[in-house]
Image (cartoon, rainbow, N blue to C red; front, side, top):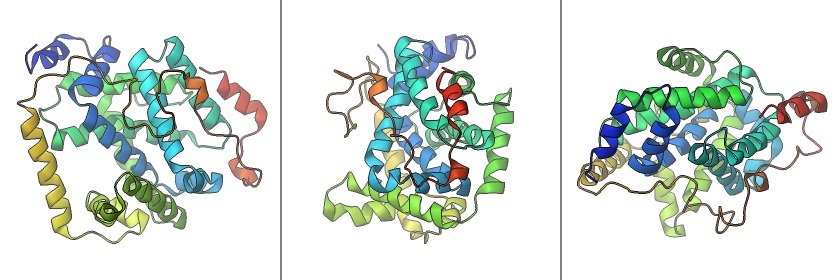
Length: 305
């Protein structure tokens, strides 16, 4: 198999009809590391919205179980991508996601915004740091894939075109990225999570490096001090050097979707596990009532998948 054979396969497919196959090739074979890093930062980005960070702070999950929450999200999304959202495992993963969201009062626009980051943040990352440019079919397939996932999550009013959804995302950030104490709280827990993946002597540098990768709007929303300009420049140069080297690597013959190597919570996953083994616990007893969804609506959301 040649280095660009998979790209040629993607170019020959229909981005709407074949969106799942294209997304599986792109995220599982062509750019698996980039998708993982981009989705980490995509979730991080959503914590700049005070209504999102307020809920996360109230549950205490990021304070007490940040690594498990990260692993649950990554594994559940990977289950849908690896097997398809309408497969047995994909539907089971969707039920877990819908059950978790159905316990809380979350606005449709917040759900819609989070969905948009899963599409456009990886596209932006790979545009800057990918070993080859994304084909237009890959960009459109990501949109069509997450549009279908969003429908199965009960998200309403998903924009009907790729540029319209991008415009929604940009407008939402312009309006809702404002500082709050809970933004900073969840942001600090997340930076701590990233730093914790490295040996202790490296953690201060990792914390600095993460700040160097954040744009000005995110820094303001988190209340973080900017890193020196050279930090972001050095990180970007390293990522571009990696991309240049990868052009000479052989293509990945098997997808890594569904077989994560970085999961720290569920040893050996997926062997011995089902998607239903994942997910957050019920809301804490002291959760404010305005954040708690009534049980009847909760049950309706659970069954939606």
